[in-house]
Amino acid sequence: MQQRVTVEIENQVAIVRLNRPDKHNGMDIPMIQALIATAKQLRRNRDIRAVILTGEGPSFCAGIDTKSMFSGGPLKTVLAFAPLLKPVANKYQKVCLIWRTLSVPVIAAVHGSCFGAGIQLALAADVRIGSPTAKLSVMEAKWGLIPDMAGMLLLRDHLPRDVAFELTATGRVLTAPEALALGLLTRVEDDPLAAAKAMAAQIATRSPDASAAAKRLFRESWNASEYRVLAAERRWQLRMILGKNQRIATARNTGKPDLPYRPRQW
Image (tube, rainbow, N blue to C red; front, side, top):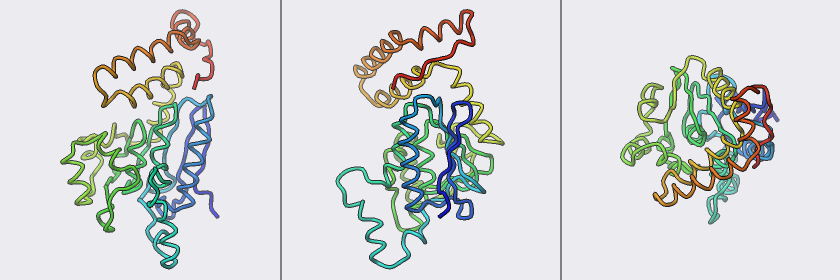
């Protein structure tokens, strides 16, 4: 079987590629499992500084491979969707949510089609850079379905309720400029992968502890009460001040620019 996900590490940046180019990187069960396993492996690697999610071939990810998921008879279909009966997050939700648990920034480089499962995966990244010709859609309505890969959590983080509902109910396909205007894309660049690499390289010049703390601070405080936000700021800042990498950052800015950082704390 073709390797569904490939990983290469360049200058402490992990480039994760969905690898079914002939299917526009449509997700099937093996790809979902490979993405989860890849994220778990990267989560344990304290030397990497950022992760880039992208797709081989003409598209980032055209969504779930419905032919694969629904073919093979009733029993195969039932077994494929049995995880929906679980009272906890299932693999279809974890494949997106797990990227939010990494202690490094995750950048999605989006090109071509980014539909359904693809847009939910992209929204799980911290930053999304799209090509001018990228197309994005919450496309589940076309197949008589709803977003169920943590889509509701991810959409509410980026869109007002009425906009998220309209896109979900219609399955409307957005151009890159439209997605940028709505906040589904962070930037539009002619070469999103090159732009993602440049951003990751800049992140790599900063303290890995600060990047990790910033990601966790945003996650736990963005929608929290004022009291919890201020408490989180104090807690994470104290950890920064007590850490060796903060002192290294200071030294790098005061005469020792080549002093290497230590691996991140967590």
